[in-house]
Image (cartoon, rainbow, N blue to C red; front, side, top):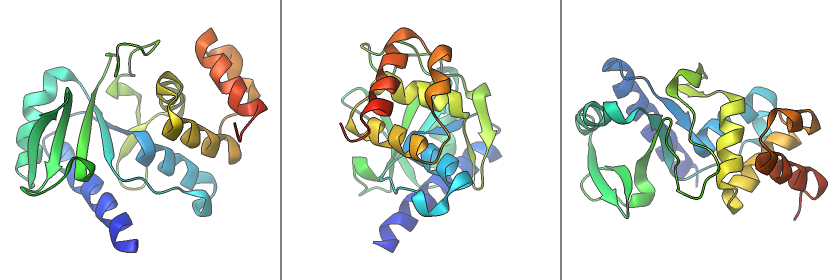
Length: 183
């Protein structure tokens, strides 16, 4: 199990280091960003994740592909998702998934993703600022995202005071998790 956790961390660090060397703005999003925020409060509450989500600007896509290919990743578009698979025999789970700043991740999402300018430094790489990350998690609101939001609520990073800052759909989703964390 430790080997699997370390493989994800190594993948994230290798990818972000390549982006930094190429001076390409980015922000780690998804479960790795949630873990970085949770770790600031309670390292024991950090949940592992299997993939790496990185927010980039679409205009940087070719430069991102070039930078990550140079460190062993292989570009694929799988069912409309831009991925950089780790190694020639890698699987989509062993990938860096690209999200595009200012664009909806899915057409059904209420708002677009944040911009990479919302990145803040974390221990190993830049992550999405907490408010932008929470908005993206509330956009998707699938089971994994609800779990990540519960983690942020549990360590006190997100609470009732957030509700007025959110659009009504996001506020209702957050209120649902606050009212019924197990639901």
